[in-house]
Amino acid sequence: MEMKKITDKKLPLWTLLISLLVGMLLGVIAAGQFVSKENISTEEGVLMRPDEAVQEAQAGERSTDKIMILYTNDVHCSIDAGENSFGFLNLKEWKNWAEQMSKYVTLVDCGDAIQGDAAGALSEGEYMAALMNEAGYDICTFGNHEFDYGIEQSLHIAEDLSHAQYVACNFMNLLSGETVVPPYVMIDYDGISVAYVGICTPETITAAAPGNFMDENGDFLYGFCQGEDGAKLYDAVQAAINDARSKGADYVIAVAHLGISENAAPYRSTDVIAHTTGIDVMFDGHSHSVIQGDRVKNKEGGEVLLTSTGSRLANVGCLMIDTKGTEELSDDLLTTSLFGAESGQEMEELIEEIQAEYEGMLGEAAAHAETELSILSENGDRMVRCRETNLGDFCADAYRIITGADLAVVNGGGIRASLPAGDITYGDFLNVHPFGNTICVVECSGQEILDMLEMAYASVEAEYEDADGPVGESGGFMQVSGMKLTIDTSIPSTVCLDENGMFASVSGRRRVTDVQVLNAQTEQYEDIDSEKTYTLAANNYILHSGGDGFGMFMDNVFVLDEFVQDNQALIDYAQKELEGFIGGEYQTAQGRIQVR
Image (cartoon, rainbow, N blue to C red; front, side):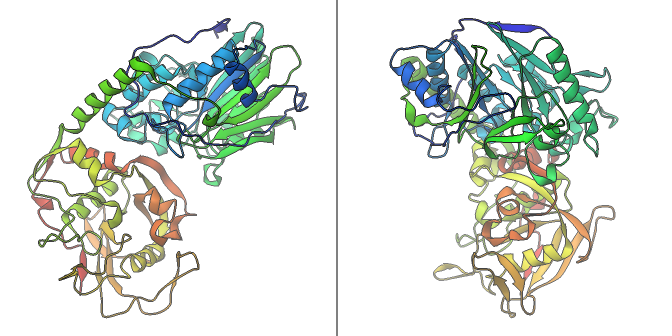
């Protein structure tokens, strides 16, 4: 493995595309702490804390004996600074401050950076690649969402567009048996060698579209060392560690996209640490966890520092390594309140240029519709929260067909605007789903589906509008795909909620009847089986967060987790499945939800 050498490194100015919008500087405070590993001192005060480093930089002083490694994970196109986001302008300014303090600075990302907002979707990740170049990233690994735009685009970004080195020890070309990108990169900081080993979650095969990794015959061309017991993954990681150590690595840092969610076993970061030796520090992503220096035992009982920054630049991590031979580490999560950021005239001009280009893209036609797809009644009242609409049918069909789930639901409160007849722009699709939720698929029982429907239609009344407007509205009213049903409004809802407003039970007669589900093989509807397991597609607000009180799915098995952004699913369905033309099948609501 070729070794990079860092001496007195200066940040070059790369005049590429950067952010779409840059907000004002706002701080995100994250309490830091000293952490330790085997044979590493934890005496407070020996190492400089990141806030002290900034103070020295502001004073014009420079310490040259600390390696500063900044790290992020699950950025998900969070370009702007805000109450809960560091923002890319501030990230770049923080790296500039670090380089004033130390000549050994490296910026690392743990994956899922290029997807999560319109900036990623409309440019297929290229805006984010340019932004990351401008911020000065040095090393990256792949998250599952790096593959949302297809394998060719993923590799185009990694190999052609990005200035950072992508690493992944378990992303395999199955034809050659070799890794697609280097398994690790080693950097020499004037005598201290640090190896950065990339690790992708094997869940990528199913968390992204499996077809992305197949040839035209359905045979897999790429893999991630997946396997039921995790052994293939552990072996790949150990081989990379051993190789790096044999070539002189003083420290091994795993740049991982694994997460700590229980349903990710045996691929969790804690699983990998427990089945390997030789890792000093693991930067982690995927589960959007904030981990401030946990110490996890490796295969031989040694302690490994595990750390993760959360998501969407809520925090930026900083690992500091002493270069004086004292073998000391300090880890912290950074706050933007420590310094100020100024963009300068050139930065402002670039922002304006990108804003203009982005706004132009939003005005381009993405599809054509034979008729308007509306959230409104003929009288102009909002109907999507109390009755089936043709737009609701379209959205739910998009979720179901794009994911391949048995069933799909879309909460009416998340459908915010109509689609016009004629040309439909990218901006129109984004206005339908403006919140940037992501589509997930869970396994659930027929009984859980029935409970969800009772909850969804608890407020529905026989009439949906009167002289004052819509009647019986609920943001949790579900538009459906792959099923049909009847709501008997003569039966009062007997849904019981807990003290937090979450679904608890149904205490009496059910008002939702005649529930049937579509059999994909026969293309016929059949009665729902309360004991059968179905796959259900919905957004993360409903499935992960229990939004609108739908808590019955939060602990279920996620077949697909944050598969694609909701507005991108609408675009993909219109362009790829309907070939750009939304025809007469969506002229009116299709009668999936009968109200009597």
